Image 1 (cartoon, rainbow, N blue to C red):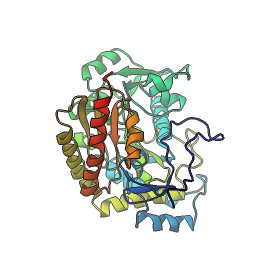
Image 2 (image 1 turned 60 degrees about the vertical axis):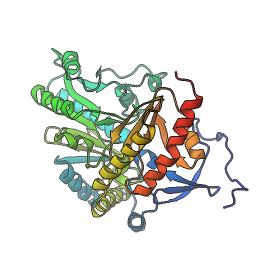
Image 3 (image 1 turned 45 degrees about the horizontal axis):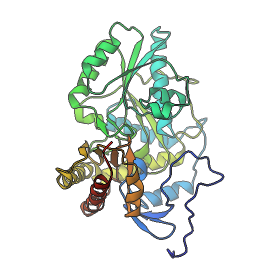
Amino acid sequence: MNAAAPQFIEAASPHVMNTYGRVSIALSHGQGCRVWDINGKPYLDALGGIAVNTLGHNHPKLVPALQDQISKIMHSSNYYHVPGQEQLAAKLVELSGMTNVFFCSTGLEANEAALKLARKFGHDKGIDKPVIVVYEKAFHGRSIATLSATGNVKVQQGFGPLVEGFIRVPLNDIDALKKATAGNPNVVAVFFETIQGEGGINPMRVEYLQQVRELCDQQDWLMMIDEVQCGMGRTGKWFAHQWAGIQPDVMPLAKGLGSGVPIGAVVAGPKAAQIFQPGNHGTTFGGNPLSMRAGIETIRIMEEDGLLAHAASLGEHLKSSLTRALSGVTGVKEIRGQGLMLGIELDRPCGVLTQRAADAGLLLSVTADCVVRLVPPLIMSVAEADEVVGLLVPLIKQFLAETPAA
């Protein structure tokens, strides 16, 4: 396609709701970790559809499998058995050590289901007004309930009154959690992300995860871990909490599970697996044959190609390279995260870097106003990771040099 004859006008569509501050490009196709816009310009994809495109673009093993499924059946209904559900559920149970799975279509839906599970758990114990512990800087979705659980006032504004029944605590502070819940018989669950994504790539410490697991066991609370963004091999283990050697009672999944096909799941352990009964919850699209095939094939390819170990080693290489390149640069506060879920926190808002990076041929995002987020496909090569560093570091340095600190 000739770049001299652009087919994309940088203006808001008059027909699409104005809900996104979009980067002024439109993507046409991709291959591996590269994508091209409709004018033929190439980009290195370090965003992966926001931690969704686990296997990159046009994967030679995934695409034929999806084409095969599309030629057979894409959707039936949960009135009927869907064999792929049992197959994918069995695999998720195997990987997690848990027992049962409910399928939906998005991370928001998975988190909403988790909140319903926690409330039903409380009601089944005779608690009329169940309370769920959530965290500062958390992000669980934009429905009214998940928005209420989210710890971002900016995205909550204009949508009150929010849902009641939440206690909010700071990250990695077990004493604060104990103090906030002391003497409250209505607490039923603790709900958090192992590594906060939208909140700025903020990890829960291993010892804190272990302390929360112990407290939940002591108090008969559900431990509910949102692995929507940090799960599915992104950190080098199937689920990020596994680095702490613990197991949750409820685990929402989505994003990378389907490599781009919409899919969500709630995995439950023995304490929560039988809470929902027929009529308590449901979905039209969740668990459809196409999304199930996407999840099955994604996991199969990840196992065949050793992508967990690759994500761990490449993530360490990328993090080390960024740390070396940005060492001593005034304005760089911290480089954190694990595996291929990394954040570079600056001391000033840096949202303009999303567009500047795209102009330079690199896709990324800025979250929590001042954190550059990198969540590339798990198939990224060492050479491509080095290219990310080569493109990104000069942009950060230039931005810091020309932009006053907040």
